Structure formats: structure tokens, C-alpha cells
Image 1 (cartoon, rainbow, N blue to C red):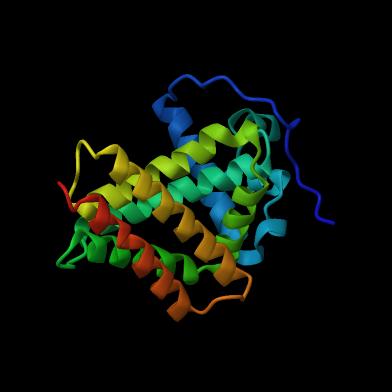
Image 2 (image 1 turned 120 degrees about the vertical axis):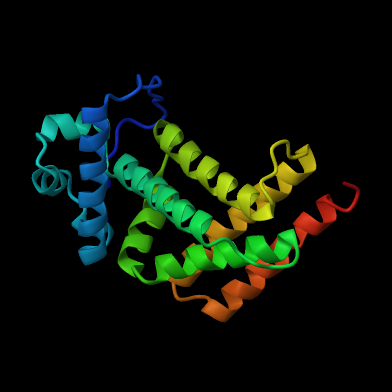
Length: 209
């Protein structure tokens, strides 16, 4: 059985104060080191001591930033999505409808993860293991995914409750298809069909808008 390094279940951390420029640079080194280790060996390769050594920070400092490898890998997923968001801004999807553009965007995100399957598997496992103590990191992943979808829809500034509900369902489906594909239970073609199908919810929620 895999031993998962995480704090006591049910504990919730207080929001951290804003990072200084130096602290942000240190945090980014940590996330990049984590991604490199995960690319090489997946979830098991991400060990806190090795991350600390690779990012050139003290082990105690690493734990102050990220109390466990689950926190660390979920934060890495948010960072990967943020980088993807920047790429998508430079080369936005060209579909005729909002549903088409969102489906294209999510498939581009999926294919980016497909190029590094061990990293994708490590991040997906971390999301699966995440308990309430990882809520801030999980919320950041959700917010980043929502921002990507909203921008693909056309940059909606004030989405309706129905549109936000549709976006949540789309997010859930995207994460679920990632897990299913990683487990070998779905092909890329099947993933694309599921993503395109769920994105049609956008058309339904925009029908009256």
C-alpha cells in the first residue's frame, strides 16, 4: 500500500499571507523541481527530501510552503494549468461556438498532459488523495480551470448561475476523463467524445441569454 505523506485529516490551514518576490521565486523553484521529479518517476518519485534538495531549499522551509506531497502536487497542477492558460491566450481556440472553443481548449489541455503521462498521473493521484486540509490548493485548481473555460467561452465577466453550474460539470467531466484515461479505461477518442458532449451544456445555458 502506498504511504501518503499528509497532515492530520480534517485540519484546515489558515490563509497564508502574500508572498514576497523572493518567496515567490523560491516557491516556483519548488514547483518546477516537483514537476521534473514527477515527469521522471510519477507520484512515487516525488519525495519531500528530494524536492528540497533539487530546489535548493531547506526541508523545513519546504514543509512551511507545502505540508505534504499531496499539497505540493496539487499546487503543481495549478501551476501547470496557469502556464497552459498563458499559452492559450497567445493562441486562442478558433471554434465557431462557445461549446466548440471550450472543447478545443480542454482537449489541448488534455494533450499537453498526455505528453507527460507520469506527471499527469502524479497530479491526478494527488487530487484523489486530497482531503479538507488541501482545500486551498484544490480551490486554486478549480479557479484556474474555470478561468480557462470562461476565456474560451468569450471572456464572460458575469456568468449566470446556470453557466457556472455547467462549468462545474464540465470541470468534473474533464478531471474524470483524465483519471479514466490514465487508468487505461478510455482512449483519447473516447475522451474527446465525452468532452465535446458535456460542453454542449454551454449552449443550453446560453439559449436564453
